[in-house]
Image 1 (cartoon, rainbow over the protein chains, first blue to last red):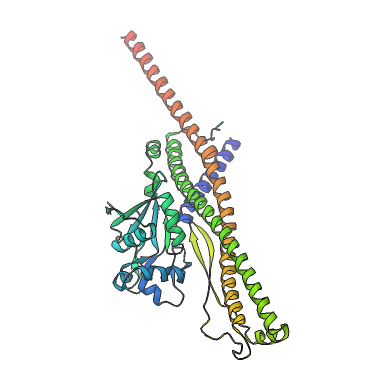
Image 2 (image 1 turned 120 degrees about the vertical axis):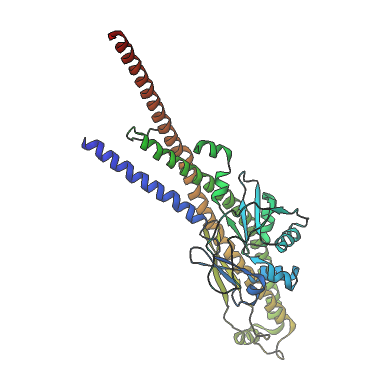
Length: 187
Length: 210
């Protein structure tokens, strides 16, 4: 009887540890997401351009990348481009979706890839970040992403090579449940 | 070979196990995505590190060649005297960038505000200017390489850690959960069948009594 009690106790502890660890993993991968995005124009004016992350840390944005973006965009586009750009990996890992608010992101990516990109509409936001409090120039990420750009893995490498600090990966729960085999097994 | 988790054979335990399996599978998917991104970043950083190392070696060799020409023209003592005045602190903006949960250092050399390098223009020649320009370029390359190498180390460590997690999920945790769920489901089905058989038996006995 006592042995059975201790075995159950051990199992419940293992269960809670596993649960905590697995949810910790989910938190860790999205710790680098920005609390709020900033416009390129605003970042260009900052002495050391940076954005605040979900975990409270700051992500430094390289001046070289900002200068490159400024060189390919005019003043009105610089006000419209929100950084860092968010990229979500597709369910089958072969495609990457870039979440964007307007046409400027499309222009930037098509210049980097040197090819035109088709226009797509996103059905619903992939994830919801808490809205940022503070100045009006910082725009909250949630409920603003209306369009997406889909690129392939080799193209992602090209984009990341050029824009290392001005792009950020998103790991959404939606992409995890998009896998049909996974959905079946959960049911 | 998956092992059965020791749990009480109750429906509540089965529901708990199913929930745990769903969570584990969701995490496995995310961890796999992360692993593939980290591997891609690692390979790209490795390529860039090789390029940066090669360019640094080129720039350093060019810089030393230019410096030796300048030293030959001015003489070591005169050159050293001029260069003592040009000593300046190097300002580097240091921060972090997050790549799929890995914090990688991000370094950027701040361009000095002054236009003059500190040495007298009357006593020096364009050879010194040229070597100073090359030294500035080499310094930039050193900072770039240091950032890349540290990033490579951190990404490598994170990849091996993530691989361990993926393997644990794929070969131990998920199979064990699946096996236990399967065992419990079979057990409950068996109980149902036993119950049905018992009821039938009771029904027959009651029919006989009547």
